[in-house]
Each structure stands twice: as structure tokens, then as C-alpha cells.
Length: 350
Image (cartoon, rainbow, N blue to C red; front, side, top):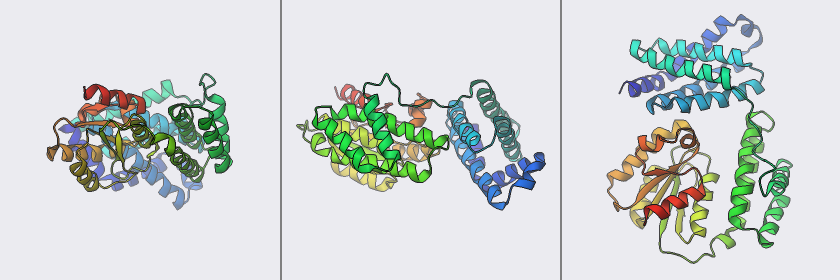
């Protein structure tokens, strides 16, 4: 209960805390005042609000690993835009001090626990992320060529490479696992280290979604087994390729799938579940601060008392970081990828 109260305080006072934290940064680092204009200060406030969103969700879930992982990720971004590790740590501690103004003694203990764990972690374990394209990957060359085409905005050649590979006999599942998955992760890494822009990242993701749709004649040719799977993202989630891969794996296994794109209203998801009575529901979020939305959706689905045999499985990056998190939000299981989601389905239905 204490964690929930503190998390809500952080969110309720987010704007004030962020502004006060940035003011503390400027007061403690006078040289910034000379170099930073209002635009930079506003960006600092925006970034601090991101930190607060992630912190609040991690505190509510009582999961330091969620916050530690986010801070590691953010530290890499900051380094690549010119903010060194020690200055980033100072900024974090200024943020803690700003939150402390709204916290009682017991809440301050929780804050210190989370912040000092994060600081100690990045001081001892900080490292630049390595490429997700590794030579041991059986389709390393295909993945490398595909990525190069995307980064050169050559969507046609990227599509041609994949379609020719499948026509030559390469299984679609292998394309998903050994090409699309590592390439998407690598694109995220390249954005994180400031090698590509947000626009390039979005282009690459959109191109991969287009290529995936071109593979549908191979995906939807499987004989049906009579089982139904609903796959949906939650809240303001914008990342959907991972969940789409999961849905396609179920299609290739003979399931009828009902896939919703990103940012689907909860009411629409629940209405569809009522209509089709699925055997399994898959929900996804890649962003930690969407966990509350996911938890509320699971609660709403279970309150409707659909088929009691219907299980809810969750996935996405926060669950990889904190493997027991699925239990805390009320799900029936978790899978780190499409193949394991299918294994969960087969095990839970037998």
C-alpha cells in the first residue's frame, strides 16, 4: 500500500517535481545556465518526466529491476547526446531530492532504495549495448543485408530479399526469429546510441510490417485447428511488431487469430472477447509506464467472467526485465517470445 501511495504521489505531482528537479540541476551546475536556453530546459523537464513515469510504475510493482534497467537504457542515450555518466547521476539524485519534498520518512526510504540501487548499478555495470546481429546467428548474412537495405531506405530490395528467401524454402518462422527480431532490436539500439533518427526508426519498422504482410499467403495457408487467439496491445502502446509476430506464429500453428494494432481502446478489446470467446488472450506492452493500463485491462477482462478456461498471457520488454511481474498484474502466464507463447498455449489447453 505504501508503494502504491508513493507512486501515485509521484504521478499526481509530476509536473512540479520535474520542474523542481531541473531547477536543482541548474542551481547545482551553474555552467549549464550559460549554455542552456529555454528549449534545452524544456527538454530536460520532458526527460525528467519520463524518469518519473518509469519510477512510479517500478515502485508500484515493487520491482527495482524495472527501474534499474530503464536507468541503464537512459544512461546510454544521455552519453550519446553529450551528458556523461557522473552528470547523469547528479541529475538523478536531484530528481530524488525533488520527490523527497512530497514524501514522508517511510516513502523516502523507498526512494533511496530505488535511486541508490540505480546509481550503484550504472556505476558498476554500465556498458554500451552490443549489436544484436551476431555471426553465430544462422541467418546473420540475411539479417545484415536486410538491415542495410532498411537503413538505406531501400524498402523494395528489403522486401525482395525476404520473399526470395522464403520462395527458396526458408521457413517463415526462421525469417521472423532470425531476421526480423534481431534487426528490430538492432534498429532500437542504433536509435539509442544516436546513430539513426526517430524518423529512420519508424521507417524501418513500417517497412518490416509491410514485408510481414507480404508473407501472409504463406502464413494463412495452415489447416485450422478450431482454436481462437486474441492479441492486443494496451493503452497508448505504439510498438506492435512483437505482438504481430506472436499472432502470426499462432496462425501458422492453425489458430484463428484476432490481432489488434497498437493503441487499441480497452472497450474494443473486451467487446471482441465477448463476441468470439477465445481460447487464449495475449496482451502486450513494451513500455513500463503502460503496466498500470495493462493491469486494469486484465482486471476488467476477468471481471466480465468470460469462459473461465480462457487464459491471459502477457509479454513485452518489462516482463523480460522482471520475470515475476506477470503474477503481480493478474495474468495467467508470460512468454518472452512467439515460440514460448505457443508452448504456453499448448500446455495450458491440455
